[in-house]
Length: 98
Image (cartoon, rainbow, N blue to C red; front, side, top):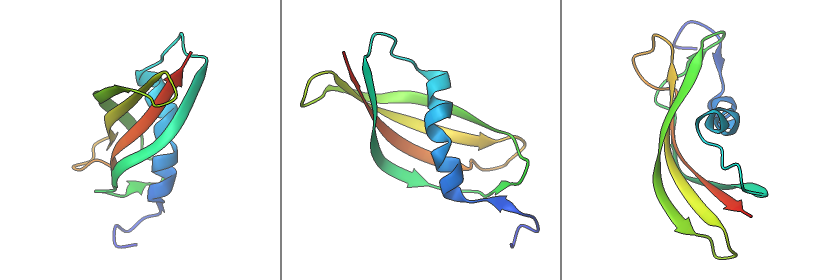
């Protein structure tokens, strides 16, 4: 690799987005929680093997879902400890039903 070390695949970092996001937001009265998809995804920097990552995010949009419940679009950045650029910038979309 051009970075001189083993790195995590970008999609591995992306797959961690869901468990990381649940650390930031939990809708406790929802009986069904659905990862509805992604609007945007970018991988600005590779994650070196063994590096620590952490999420930061905000809610970009809340809408009524077509079948009841709410749909939340989030802006999430997954940072690499001591990294100059984030590992992942994404807009996940979640649906919550009760």
